[in-house]
Amino acid sequence: MASKDQATIEDVARIAGVSIATISRAVHSPERVAKSTLKKVNQAILVTGYTTNAMARSLRMGRSNIILVLAPDIGDPNFSSTLIGIETEARARGYAILIGHTQNDPARAIDYLRYITSHKAAGLILFTGRLPLTDAVSAMPLPPTVAVFEPVRDVTYPYVGVDDRAGGRKVTEHLLAAGHRKIAFVGDTQMRIAYQRRRAGFDLAMDAARIPHEDRLIIDGDGSIESGRHAVELQFMRDVLPTAFMCVNDSTAVGVMNALAARGYSVPLDFSVTGFDDVPQATYVSPALTTIRQPRSIIGKAAIQRLLTMIEDQGDAPPPVEELIAPDLILRGSVTTPPNTERR
Image 1 (cartoon, rainbow, N blue to C red):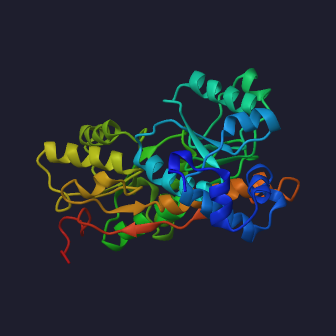
Image 2: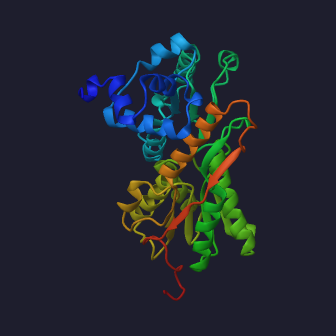
Image 3: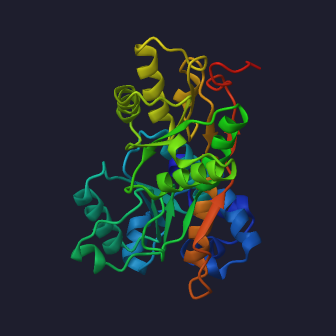
């Protein structure tokens, strides 16, 4: 057999045990091929490394096997881990992934959207939580689209992500079970739907525990390390201190822990701190951070499965608007009973 770089359609046909014509149909019109056969063909493609000129095919046939993934920050651990699930499943189904790094720049996003429109990409996965609001975009006939991690305010786009509300409630209940009653929520914002849902989960847990609103400290934040540091400084300036900080994400929690350490306080002996996401950094801080883990690879796989169903079954009933995946509470060393209570 030829090397992977030179693999031919004949190599794929031989390994799959089907004709060259079947391979061609599987690549160009997979809806015309039995699922069992398509699976064998896709496996043979993976084994041989056989590739076709997907862009040329899209221009020639008016369809494509390219899926564009738009992301604001490809360095975000949430993105890289989720991409593994997306790409693995996409390749197994005969699709290629193109990553569009917008860097939170609407002009970049518009350029990528023009690209997929002109070349008729098969589908779009959005990590950005929004599309650029311009006349150019509104006039574009977008392919099937699924949002991941951050819902798009336009509810016509299905969403696959962690159950942020359940995660916020779960981690708050953990703090309450440890004996905390005066808990600060750090990261309140109107800009991120996911963060709003985490705040809602916090309130649900506090309501269930009958914690009065005056004992809930709600602090604005954008999810950055600096916003966590600022939250701590703000509370000391006001001289209104919680016993625990429930942070909207791990970066904010790191900022909180750094600010407390700079003032000479110990986590968790003086203050307990929790995060959300379980990024790798959560295990490197001292103490390691108690947090909510997002099942990122599972989310990626579910998102691409949802998208491919939309692509391959167009004309059927639309899928449910949201698919929320249950999060896990990861217990580490940043939470204990509040000061002046019996330590466990």
